[in-house]
Image (tube, rainbow, N blue to C red; front, side, top):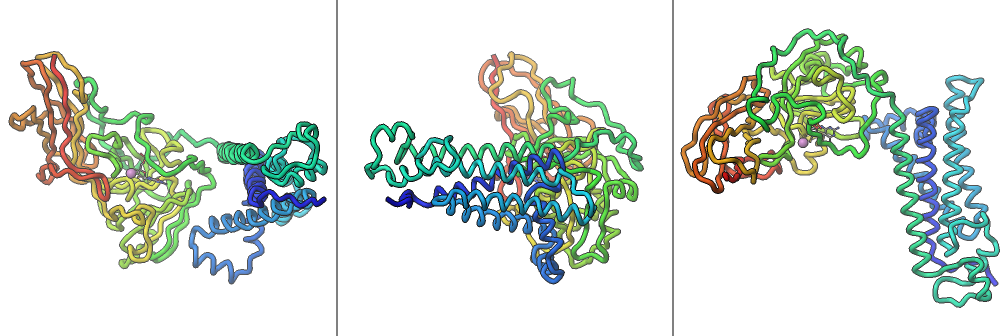
Length: 547
Ligand SMILES: Nc1nc2c(c(=O)[nH]1)N[C@H]1C(S)=C(S)[C@@H](COP(=O)(O)O)O[C@H]1N2
Ligand SMILES: [Mo]
C-alpha cells in the first residue's frame, strides 16, 4: 500500500493558487474595513519598498516610471502565487505541510504589517495590522483544504486531514482503477472519480474565483471615503456666460441642451470604478519639463484660477446617430496654467496623462496649451465630479474626442514625445490626434416612429467642437435641402440644437436626413466612415411612417 495519489498534479497547484487568491481577497476586504494599507499585497509591498536598496529602487523607477508601484505590487502577487503553487503541490501528499506553508505566508503578511507599523509607532502595533493577515491565512487555508479534497475526489467537507480518505482515494487512483476498499467504504466516504470529481473541483474553483472577486470588489468599495459632492465654496474666477433659452420644451423628444448628470454617457475601461480619496490625491507633472510639479487637490484649486465652461464631450466610438455624446457645465483649472508652471520643453509633442487605474491617454501638447482652455475639471453642473465621471479630477479637452483628452481619475501628466511613449489607445491603432468631426443627429422623429399626417416637428443636435455650428439643413425624401432653425449658441465647444417644421401630406414611409455646416463654413462630409480609427462620419438618416 502506498499513499501516493495517482490523480494529476495540476488541481493541487490550482488549489494552492486559488487559496492564495481567496486569501488576498479576504485580507483586502478586512483591510478595507480596518486599515487600507494593511491589505496583504500592499503591506508586503511597503516592506519591500522600505528594504529595497536605493540602486535597485532607482533602476525600477527608471524602468517603470510612475508604474513602479504597480510593478512592485504585481511582483509581490507573482511571488505569492509561485509560493502558493508550491504549497498546493506539497499538500497533495502532505496536507499538513501545505497548511503550514499557508500559515507561514499569513505570518509573513502580519510581520510585514507589524514592521511597517513599528517603523511609524515603535511601541504599539494595532490589531488592525494583524486582522487582514490572519483572515487571509484562514481563508487561504480553508480554500486549500476544500479544493484539495475535491481534487482527491472526496466530498468538499469532511475531516481536515483525511488520512483514511486519502489512502482510500490514493488506492482508487482515479476513475478507472478498482478501489481496494469494499463497496460499503466507497459509499461511506463518498469518493467519486473521473468526470464527477473534475466537475466538482472545477465548480469549487469557479466558486472560489467568483467569491474572491466579489469580496475584493466589496473591499474596494469600502477603501475610500465617499466623494465630496459640495463644491459651492469653490471661488470661480471666470464664469461661463448665462445659459440661454433652449428648445427642450419646444421640441418634445429633443436632446436637452444640457445633459442631466445621470444621463451623461460613460465610457471607460474600469471594471471597478476607482475610488480616490480627494484629500490624499497627489497630482504630478513630469517628463520633458523645466521642473516637476506636484499638487494636492487643495493646491490645485487654490493656486490656479478656477474657470467654468460649457463643453460637449463625445466618444470616438460613437456611430453616426449614436448616444455617446453629452454636454455640461464644467468647473476646473486650465491645463495651460498648470503646464506653464512646469514649463513644458519645446521638444515635447504629447502629454501622456495617467489615471489611477493605470490607463494612459495622450493629448497633443498644443491642445492643452492653446486658447481652447482645456481643463483639469473637478466639477460638473454645480457638483463635484461623480466617481464614474472621474472624481476627484479629470481632463476635459474641448474639440478632441474623449480618448485623446478626457482622462478620468487623473493622477499624472508627463510631457513626452510620440516616438518615446504611446498611450493605451495608440497601442491599439487609434489615431493620436483626433479632432471632433462635424456631425449632426436627428432626435425626433425617431427611427420607425409613426407620426400623424400633417405638420411634423423634427429636431436634434449638431456639433463641431472647436469650430461651432453655423448651419443645419434637413432633407425630406428626395426633396431639396432646407435650412433648420438653430437653437441658441452656447459657444464653439458646445453642441447646438436645431428644429425643423415640415408637412407630410400622404401616409407612408419617409426618410429624413440631416447635415451640419461648421463655423468655418465646411459642410459635414457625406462620406461614410466607421469610428475606427478617428471617428465616424456620414449623414444621419431616420425613416418614419406617416399614418
Ligand atoms: N481613466 C480613464 N479615462 C478615460 C477613459 C478610460 O477608459 N479610463 N475613457 C476615455 C474615453 S474613450 C471617453 S469617450 C471619455 C468618456 O468620459 P465620460 O465617461 O465621463 O463620459 O473618458 C475618457 N477617459
Ligand atoms: Mo471614447
